[in-house]
Image (tube, chains in turn green, blue, brown):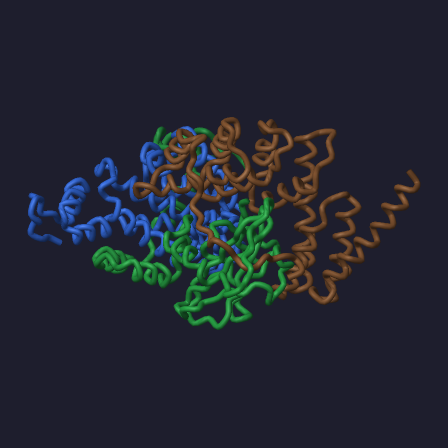
Length: 199
Length: 192
Length: 220
C-alpha cells in the first residue's frame, strides 16, 4: 500500500487549506472527496413505522415475549442466550427423563450440551456435528408441544465441537443461538456453529 | 409533531427542538416524541449501518433494533447533548456483532450492483456506476478502517465524536482514517 | 531402534486403513484419493489427522462438490501446519501435543490472528496449560469487536489472577454482557468493568437438566 503524502492527510483532516495542495496531490484529494460524496446518499428505506410499532406495543406476557422474539424475521443474532432458553432448558428435565430410563451423569471430562431452535412447521430437526462424525440420524431434537421449539440435551466430551441443525432432512442451518461460528472452509461462506462444552 | 405535554413535563416539542428537549419529553412519558429522534437520525444510521454491513436489509434490522434499544434505555443516555454519538455507538455495536458473527469481517456484496467495465475512465462512468465502484472499494477495507472512514467522511464526525462512538483513542482513529484513505485510493486505482 | 521403526511402519498402514474405512461410503469416491493423500501428508508430518477426517466427513454429509471438499480438507491441513509452527515457536525444543496443535488450528479457523495466538501462548502463567480455553475466549472477544491488544491484556490479567480453563470463557461472556448494558457501552468501558471484576467474574449462565439419557459418541 502506498502511503499518502502527509499534506494530503492534513487537508482531508481539515488542518490545511485545499488551495495550498500541490498539483500532484489534487487528483487524489478530489477522488477521495468524490468517493465520500458518493457514499453519502442514504438508503431509500425507513424503519420508523417498525420502531414506533414496537415501542407502542403493550409489554406482553412472558409467553408472548417468547413468541415475539422467536418470530422476528431476519433478526440480528443476539450475542447472549435470551432468558427464555434457560426456561426451556429447565423444563427439559421432565422431557428427557424417560420413564424407567437410566439417567446419564457426565464424567469428569464430559459436560452437557443443550440444543434449542425455533423451527415452526418443521417435521424434523436433527443435530449433526463433529461429535457424531457428522452422521445423520444420530441426534434428533423433539418438539412435544408442537410449538415450533425443538430441543435436546446430550453429554459430550469437554472442549469444542462444530455442528449444524438439519431441518426436515434437507435444510442445513447454523444454530442462530450458538453465539460462536466458524467458516466451514468449503469456500462459499458457509459457517458452522461452534459449541464449547464445559465440565 | 406536537402533543400536549404529559403531566409533569412542561415541554412541547417539534422537529425544531433540541435533542435535550426531545429526550426530556420522552422521559416525561411522551413516547410518540421518539418519532422526532427517528426522523432526525434514521437516515445517517441507515447509511452508516449499510456501509458497515454491505446490505440494506441487514442495516435496516440493525438500525431498527438499535433504535428500540435506545428508546428502552434512554434514561441511561448520560448526556442528551451527545445523543447522536450514543445512537451511533449502539448501532456500531450491533453492526460489529453482526460482522463478528460473519467471522470474516468482510462485507457481503449481495446487494452490490454489477461493477462497470474497469477500462472506462472515472469521468466516463454514470454516477450509479461510480457509486458501485466506491462501494466495492469500501467493502474490501477491514471493518475498523471502513468504519473510521465512514464516520469521518460520510457521517462528517469530528475525531472527538468518533472517539465517543467507537471508544478508540483519537490518535488510533486518525491512523485508521489515514490507512483507510490509502487503501481506498489503491482500491479505486485498481478498479478504474 | 529397528524394531521400533518396524512397529511404527506397521502401525501407519493400519491407521490409514481405519481412516479410509471411516471415509468410504461417507464421501464421494472421487474425493477419496485426494483426501487420503492429504491425511497421509498430515500423518507424515506428525500433525493430528482427526481434524482432517472430521472435515472430510462434514463435507460428505453436506454434499459439498468434490473439488471444494478436497480444498476444504487442504485448508485444514494448512491451518494445522501454521498451528504447529506457532506451538513450536512458543515451546521450543518440546514436542507439540496434538491437542494443542488442533486447538490452535481451530482458533486460526475462527479468524484469530496468528500473532495474537502466539502472544496468548507465550508466557502463559501456567506452562503446559491447554491453550483451547484462552484461544476460544480470545476469539469470542475479537468476534464481539474488542481490539486484539486489549483482548490479550485482559486475558493475561485474568490468567495471572488465577483464572483458567472455562473461567476464561466466563471473562469473554462477561465482557460481551457489559458491552450491551445501558443501551451500549464502548469496548473500552466494557473491558474496564470486567477487569475490575477479575477474579470474581460471574460464571456464565447455563441451565442443565438434572439428567440426560443419552451420551453421544462417534459410534452413535
